[in-house]
Image (spheres, rainbow, N blue to C red):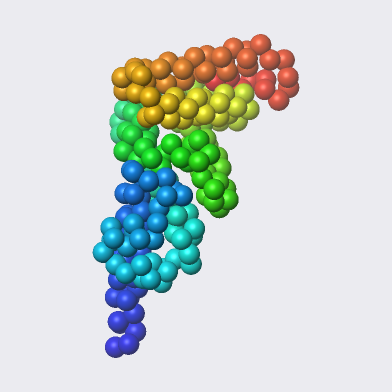
Length: 217
């Protein structure tokens, strides 16, 4: 009988932890990671402040866990309809990225402009960027004439890494300034991406190095 009660306890604990993480992710709409306080979370989740420390070692550990959950949410949002064409999938993912950034504007701007003091958070951001770059390369390679070669292209990887920073910078400025419409922002990012791909292709075509030979975008 004792053993049958254990799963119920574990599920209740997981549910409470999930509730706290969700409360933290929601706060990223209006708070930077450094601004999230235990009091904010306790009030949002309707718990005592001390209860949060039952699930997380300290506030910094909680903030890192919140950003990990936000990263998972974004990755899920970027899963677009597989029935779309390759280009349509890429553009739908850009739409989803802009929408997520807009919905979590305060946290997004702070994370991408270096406005976070926590070293663990900075390390998490770098890990997330590398994972997202890997997925970005895979998505673009899927529409290339030779997907395998494109996935292995060092030029393509460098080009898409640069475009990720361009896209993030354009979105951060848009969130702060709103000097163009959302549609104009989208068009700018999409056109810049195709320009970046064209540049990468031109570099590879003119390259005479053994390592890049045959790896066309």
